[in-house]
Image (cartoon, rainbow, N blue to C red; front, side, top):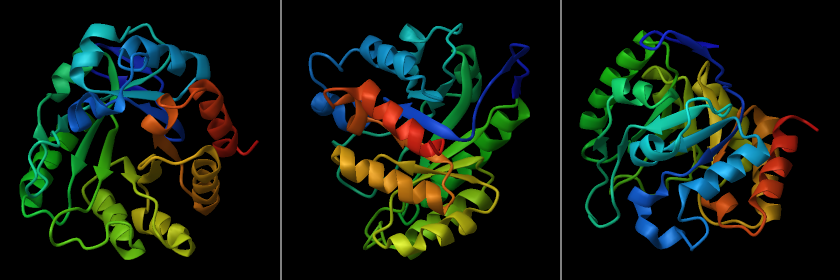
Length: 252
């Protein structure tokens, strides 16, 4: 349970389960969308039918579509960038913690691109966000993505483990990580994160068998859940896919 001081209400927020992400419109533009999933209403319908544990949005969709009476907790992503700029990755804050609370958020998220020449600015900004969010009882999720000219392989297990540990050291409650290219190191990545809960990022386009296999191995290694997006809502039957992943995460 999380207490939101500014609005004086208790909300449920699980640090285990499946989160449905729909923050792609800024990061990728409309490229990922079709006539059906371009509308947040469709995503909300999928989330409700599948009973996901959280829905991840940027403030535009949250302000216009999220119903505070919804049983699905809201995570608002506080920073983001476009794909139009091709230089070193750098994502800055565009939404305040107080604004996220106003829209009904039960948690907030932020991406840090460790290894970018601009990482110091993102680390500093995350530190302020972490303090503000925890002061009002909101969990903080870090998208911990090593990236930039200095990072040669962002799926190497030592790099993913570094990303996990960095999230723990900076006070994140949950860290969202890429799947490493050496599955034998999954357990070490969880240990590196210590008390920070580890969620698997949905990542690149995968078929049903591959994504379910990744989730199963990650959960067996100690991951607490998965945050998936286009691998789900681009599919023909997103509700079915979400329910299959929920069964894996819940050990059924």
